[in-house]
Amino acid sequence: MQFESTAEHYDRFMGRYTTSLAAALCDALDPQAGARVLDVGCGPGGLTVELAGRVGATNVAAVDPTPQFVEACRERVPEADVREGAAEALPWEDASFDASLACLVIAFMSDPDKGVAEMARVTQRGGTVAACMWDIAEGGMTMLRTFWAAMREVRPDVGGELKRPGTSRGDIAERFAAAGLEEIDDGELAARADYSGFDDFWDPFTHRVGPSGMALAELAPDEQEAVRAACRDALPDGPFTLDARAWFARGTVAPGG
Image (cartoon, rainbow, N blue to C red; front, side, top):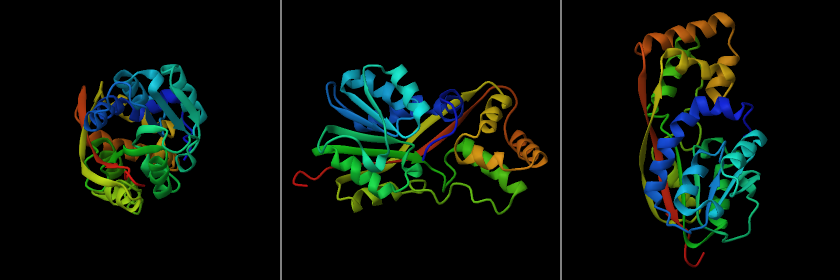
């Protein structure tokens, strides 16, 4: 899935969570200095930056289907091998990496099972594949839970993101098992983001970033204002911090696979 938003708008919307989530994902994977790693669906480069700091920028590769995100990622990590492409057809040879990671991406793959299979293909035998995605099913991602609850006050039949891959407990691990990965760990990661006030929370939704921003853009102006008011009522005055939970899984590419 390509995003229409600019890298700046994405950073204000979801990128502000990436710093803590990328660190948590890397802590769970623990890539060693010098390891060759791939960031699948890199976006503007939040995880790419974190990986570069751990293994060295020249050992990092990244890929994303959105041209403006690829450009931003290249600017942020100029020594990394950053390419435009889809998770379902990764532009690298078999067994090119020690580890392949996907942070907040599996829900937006056109074919997530093929995407996972591709991540396994480009990872060497005995290497690691890891992914995480926001907990939508149980409401662990506070920002999105707040927004979609407000949307349902205005449009009770709104679908939201509940049916997207990876957003329910155990879904990523099941996909990893189906792809033939072994030694699968299934858990959760914690992230957080700070907001200077309500406008800092609300404004990013107005720039058509992701499913929530696109859903808001489809409403009439009075409906948008009603969603805004419902979010305003649900959040504190002044600066605040919102916590977020992501489902996480990692698996090992079969030594003989």
